[in-house]
Length: 288
Image 1: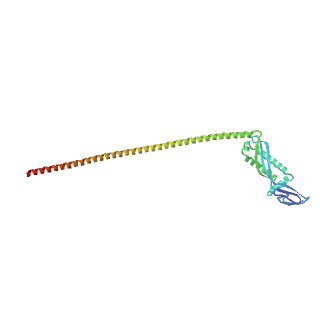
Image 2: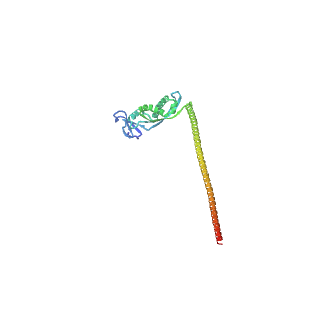
């Protein structure tokens, strides 16, 4: 036969005589080549690519007896180069099987575990917590598939269905609950908004009242100061008018006094002149 070469995603399983394997069993080569002796040795190839499988469990009773259909997606592969023990187990279990037979066996195993987990949970638990459901399925499947030389890369619950409208009723109930909560939330928000609006209006009115008081106080003070100023102006004007009248009276009196002094002086002068005339007449008489 000569050399046989396989790619990194394939395992070459060599069996027969002259197998260099101290632990017994098949000689396994991953991503390499091997000389195959004709007649005394034979080989098979296992595909190590990840298998994507749809796991369907139809009408399985849940914990409370409600039939449910669950569809999961599992990613499974045969152990790789670093997992020689798993490869050895896989070679023992799948050496004579093709890819479709391997997928059928894995799907059947996974479906059994999926069915078992459905029976331990309620519809509500599965519907509301798919992550826990997926983790439970993967946890119990790991050991069984590991015994076959397989590795579960991932498992996800893809879809949930039922034929009795249970999920639809559950959804309607949830929708009604959400709508009710939304209405209650809206009513609460409206109430809070109105309370805040009322408080804001009250605060505005209180501030307006305070402002009005301040304005009234300012106006009263202004009017008071204005009245005081006007009174002071009137007082000053009255004082000024009185002073002016006093000055005018004083001036008139001074004028009268001056006129009187002039008259007195004139009278004195006339008297002196008259006296002199009388003296002169007496002198003339004596001479004659």
